[in-house]
Length: 489
Image (cartoon, rainbow, N blue to C red; front, side, top):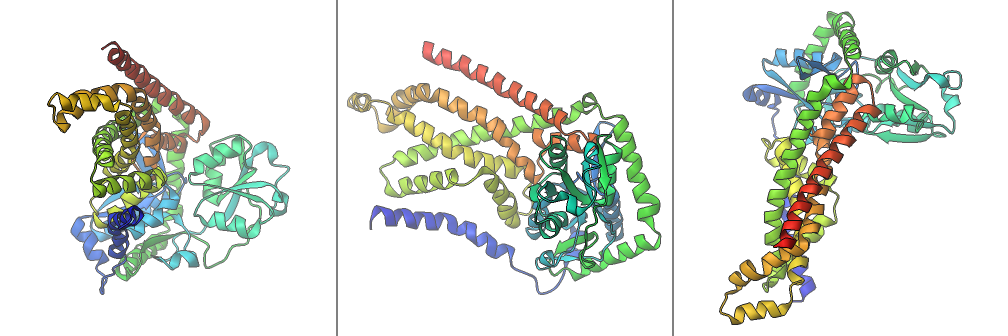
């Protein structure tokens, strides 16, 4: 069998298990036991993107992050009617449907519109609230932009995966569409002149305008489909029992007019209080928590990545063609795919089989597996940099192959590769920010919470940038200290 065929066979065997995950995730029960499963677990896990006031957003209460808004209150009422506790999972809006389909969440309550395309993959409840589509613009441009026709050849922003994104594509085809995952990032783009307007629902647009004197909300005159206009609760496909409970809850809320009489005024009160106490210093606990999780992910990633990377490098240098092929397959595959995709695959893909897999654990696993591939190549290059004569001399003195590696090759290789290893460790601190997309409370995730809570976009990012610099600069100096000791030795 040729080397190419062996490599292909190993790759096929390695990733067959990955493809089997899809088969497991698509199996459907013949009967709907969605309500029974939630009651058995004792909790309703609701996915949301908490950067969309007054629907869902965060506030700081007694030093802790609290999720509030119209959708959060609806989620509480639904959990109450089911007789279970409520658990909120905050993640990017465009990750919510994946989380639902992989059963990481039981429902999505995030001002999501029941479009025909979404109905193909998930079930929706009745619409619980309908709001017009507005445009958020800079106050200085109020005289320039008034109707949709004024945005011809302009740049318009919208949240990726949202109904607003589709509206821009359909009704503002002459404009340049800029889609981002976070609404707070779009507001930054608006204030920095990267976009001329942002499409969002009326309550949200007015909320941002009310809390930022430089912005204003306008009604440009969008034409909306009556079937897709409004917000509904999304559930996994074939969950009629759960949809029925949700519809009953929505009917109860509408009958008492709780959204207009209670939920919106309550959200407005939270927003007003948050605006009065939105200094960066008051959110230091957010940044502190972000630093803690970032360091946990980095240290764990370095530790497990180094161990696995060492084994992979030895496997690649092994005389065994099977071990060599497995190592090459793994390294090339991991280095050839983005870390973001790997993080989402571990959490949503493997997590579809291991339902109890926490986001933090998934993030550590993905970062460790990714780092191992790069560390393996660094270690391999260090080992191959040692002259063959030293290995031969050690063996001629009676050392075994293991002893030669342990006492002669590895110590010298480590000295040679230390700068490259140090660079990988420093890079890992920054790359760990990717895990925020699955809801891990790292520094980037906490920064986004501060942006959402304070209605400030640039300042929290600047503080996060300084914190990342301090961590990476400090680690670089520490690694340089060890490097000098190695050189001295």
